[in-house]
Length: 180
View 1 (cartoon, rainbow, N blue to C red):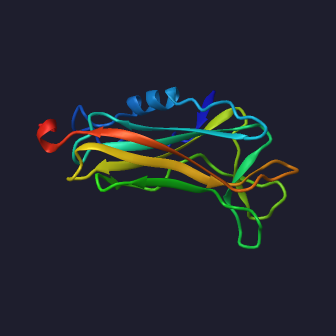
View 2 (cartoon, helix red, strand yellow):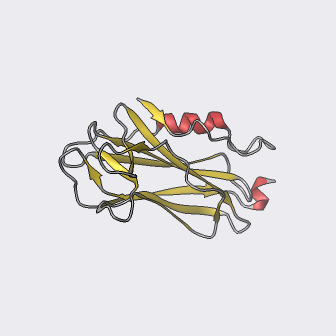
């Protein structure tokens, strides 16, 4: 299955062998395989934390892949006058990690009938969302990251109630002493 979402991302500057590379990121994302969605749950999600021996200042990328049944979609942007729920991407972490940038993801599509409304639909492709973090000076031991989304999924005739899906990820961190 193809992936939509990471064509514009560049890895952190490669100043050491331990930094995250685009090749490592691509490999980890290819292995990230959501379950097949079913009619009673038309969106499946799988997440991973991608890193290489993360010590203070090194990159950790939280990646989330979505698979949506053909014909279904979630809302990326909803004007205030519309009754739909805009998708909210979730990233929770402790003091061991610092957020580096905003979520990156696939392009949105215009809704066929709702003006000024944008959607995500995957069809034959998985949707990839990711966000870069950096290990803080306090980072050693293990960090926990919660990744997920709150969304409303619809097809041409029906919308399901808003749902939240999350997945907890563990990242083994190196201390300053371990990384030298």
